[in-house]
Image 1 (spheres, rainbow over the protein chains, first blue to last red):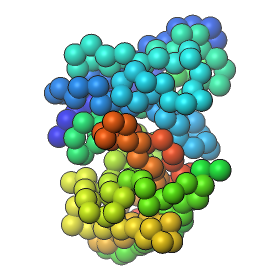
Image 2: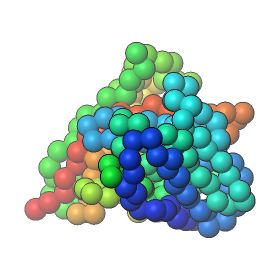
Image 3: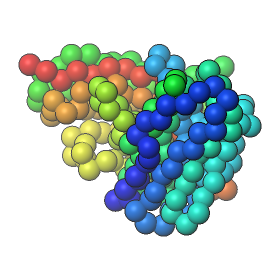
Length: 107
Length: 122
């Protein structure tokens, strides 16, 4: 199975900060990676698919990039509604494993 | 409005069974592959199973293989998860989700339900 190592597990940041979250795949997955946002009591939301494609309706302050087996989700200017937990998931081969999650908290 | 609504969760004893349902609306259900994902209390997301649009391909996580069965009824726009031989570690919120396909490749899940809670305890 492909392991997804996500870091950091939590980050404290202020409104307006740039935040980056990284996922490393244990083997090559091309660009078959998605990023999700999860908030308590809300439906989980797809942010990025195919490593860097922005899902419809997602603000442009979210972006995804890839370098080899390292994937990055960046939030260019953190907004109050962005405080949440973020997960990566590889979509290259079954089982479609998730990273451990990153909780973005208010500083 | 595109929507997925799960139901069927509850409290069950270890070794027991439960059947979850997921009702789809607002899109052509028969055109989409579907997945089940779960989240144990205070833990991260775990992919559970996948079923293709025509039910021709079904895959499971090793943790549930042989105990869980995924099926669908396209006429009823519904997805199901039959869970047998339940264990304490199956306690979780179970989500159904729609697969996103881009250029003939699976690329994550673009619609999620709110989830239904399964508690396995004596």
